[in-house]
Length: 374
Image (cartoon, rainbow, N blue to C red):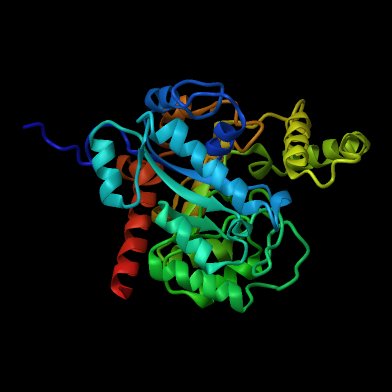
C-alpha cells in the first residue's frame, strides 16, 4: 500500500495560493484549462508544483446592482464546465477534501466570491452560493457595497452597517472565510469587532513598503495575525512598488479621453465597459518599471516581521493582473519563488509555511470555529 504524503514534511513544499481570477478568464475566452495563455492552467500548475488554488468568482462592480448575480453565476458555471467537468482539478469544500485531492495528484480548487455586490444584499443568495461550494468571500472590490466600504472608494459607512454585520455573522457561523482584501481600514476594523473567527486578506501587501490604499498598514497586519489569520502577498507590481503604482495612474490619465470616446453610448453595457477597463489596464502597465521577485519577497519578510511567520503566504492575483514580477510570469514559475524564500534565509519549515501550510491551517481554523457553533 502506497504511503500517503504528509504535506507538512514530505516532498517539495505544498504550494497553495489564496487568490486568482482565472475563472473570469475562462468565462470570457474560448480557452481550455488544460493549456492556455492564462497565468494558470492545468499544465502550468503541474510544472510549477501548485497543489491547491482558491479561484475567485470575480464580478466587476460595473455589473451592480442588477446584473451582478447573473454574472457571478456565469463565472461559476465556467469553472464547472471547463475545470471540474473535464476533471482538470478537484472542486473541494473542506481541508480534508483538499488533502485527499492533493495526495491523489490532483489540483485542489476552492471557490471564493470576490466582491460582496455579487450577493445583491441578500443573506439567502449568500447561502445559495455556499450550497454551490463557495467557501469564502471578499467583502468588497473597487467600489463600496451597500453594507461595507472599499479601500478605493469614497468612505460612506466608515465600516459596516447592520446588514454588513449580519452578513459577516452568517459567514462566521457557516464556515465561510471572511476576506478583507479590498476593504477600507475602517471596514477591516469593524469586521474584527463584529466576529471572533480568524480572518484573511487573500491578496494584499504591506502599506509600509508600498503606500497604496489596497495594502495593509502594520496595525492591521498585527490584528489579523493576532486573530490567527492569514495574509497572501499579491504579485501585482503596483502593489509591490509605489513608483509602478504612480506610473499606472499617470498612464490612465493619458488614456482618459480615448476611454470616454470609446464608451460613448455604451454606459448601460457593463460587459462592454468591463472589457474596455481591462484593455486600458493592460496598456497602462506597458513601459513601466519592472519589478523583481526580491521586491515581492520584501513584503513577505515585512509581513512576517510584523505579524509572525505563521500569518503570511501567497495570494498571487494571477489572471487578474496585467503584469507580474519578471521572475514570476505564471504558475509554472513557483520554483523560483521557493528558491527565493530560501535565499532570504527562511528555514525549510518556514518556506513550507509561506508556500501553503499557513493557508491550509487558516482554513482548518475557520472550519473548526464553525463546527464549534453548530
